[in-house]
Image (tube, rainbow, N blue to C red):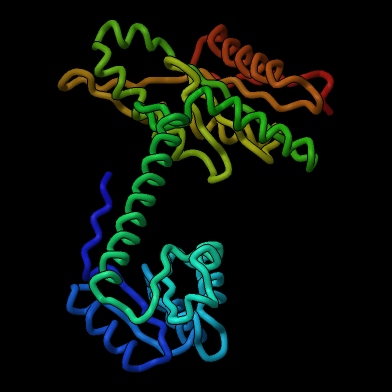
Length: 311
C-alpha cells in the first residue's frame, strides 16, 4: 500500500521570531504548493500543534522563551511530526545536538530557499516511506496471526494468547473458561456440495461466533472445521450462556448450497474451566474431550468437563 499525500494536504509550521525571515519562508512554501502556518514562539507553536495536524515543523533554534531544540524535544515526545531546525549560530549548535533532540534535518542561515525545499521534500519523502513500512509490517503481523478464510485468529496465536490469559487469571485469581467447537457432518457437506460451499459455511461461522462474544473474548479457527474461544473472567455458569448463544445462532443460520434448498448446520461444543497451576495442554485436552462428548451424545449439543481438583 502506497501512501500518497498531496502537497495541499501537507501542513507545515514555521517557527521564527524574525518576521522578515518567517514571512519569506511562509511565502516560498506556499508557492511550492504546501499549506503552512507561522508563529514567532515555541509556546504559540505548541498551541497550534494541539488543534491542527502538522506534518513538519521548521523552527529556528534561538527563540524568545523556549528555544527551538527544547521545542523539538517536546514535539518528538508528543506528536507524530517531523522537525527541521535552522540557525545562524553554527558555532554554538551542532547537527548532532539537533538530531539527538529528534530533528530530521539541520539548516544554516542565511536560508537558501532551494536548499530548504530540497531538505523539506526529503524529510517528507522519508516520513512517507516510514509510514508505508509501518503499515506493511502491521499488515504482515495481522496476516501471521489471522486465518485468511474466517478472519478469526489462527491456532498459532491461540496458544500465545491462551498462555497470556492463563497468567492473568493466576495473577488476579479470576476465572477463565474455554470453548471448543466442531461443525457437525462437515465432511459430508463438503463431499455433497463442494469445498467452495464449505468455505462459505466456514466464513459464516466465523462471523456468527464473533457476533456472540464480548470485546474481551477472542475466537480462533483451531484447524479445519474446529474453532475455539477464550473467555476471560467467565465462570462455569457464564460459559454455558455463551455456548448456548453460539449454538442457537448456528441453528438459526440457513445455507443455500443449491437453489431452492435451505440447510441448517449445527455444531458440537465442549466447555471447560482453567484450574489453577494446571498445564495449558491439560486444559486444551479437556476442552477437546468435552467437545467429543457432544459428538458421542448425538451432536448439536453442549458438554462440559471440569477438573475435579478445581474448586
